[in-house]
Length: 123
Image 1 (cartoon, rainbow, N blue to C red):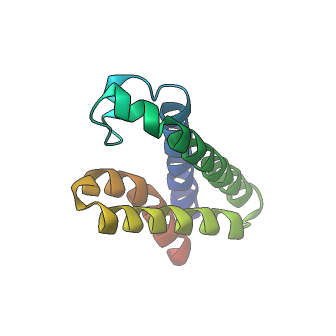
Image 2: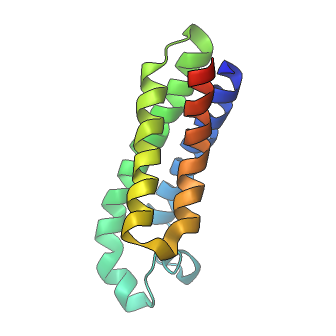
């Protein structure tokens, strides 16, 4: 089960690095800013500084999950991967409770780390 936890924590980490790229480098593209709820370029331009900041949160969280997965695989250290995965699941819950129309995004964000946490509990 530890291998399952490592794999899903790494997937969650990579997803958050991808979200960072979208929020920081590609947010001005209509196909991207519409995913984050901006209806037009003007709204996206107003929101861009906030998403830039949030993007770095996602980067640091994703890197934490990746390092945690590596530490778990290498030495069995659980704390970093558990913390980052709990954080990701919590963020998914907050997202769906605040914006139910984003339930799909919340599920995509929370499912891989939830699987990693369950695997950790079963390991």
